[in-house]
Length: 180
Image 1 (cartoon, helix red, strand yellow):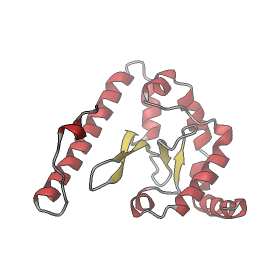
Image 2: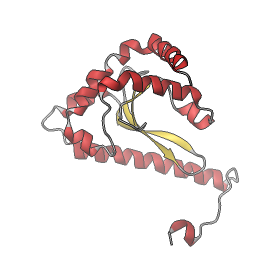
Image 3: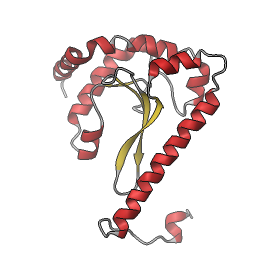
């Protein structure tokens, strides 16, 4: 995609989300100041807020090019990728709470992307982490528990589809479970 096309898409993005987008640099700066968060969130390396505009320009153009229905339906141009060199962690501008989440892929039919919420209300999360009684380890264990519950639901849905013959399930053999 030509840079001029990317700029048009970014200008359209700014028409809708400029006010919310202006909050993101200070949020990234604030999150980056907490080593506990950046080290304990798996694979999280915060984006340098000075690269935010270019990062969002690339993100908006990428989202506009998705042609696979699973990606096109899931990913949104108003999500702000806040991770350096990856598209794992996002802030959603469409909600006043600015949720912070990680995306992951469910590798079994029915295939899907899903959100693992780190904070459904980012403002409250930033207030909580300043509290001396806040335990990041306990909090992240709770987040992991919610993801496990969500994944369990995906597997239950998969089982139901398989039992109703709406999904072709292949037999399990030892080679699919274990490597050489």
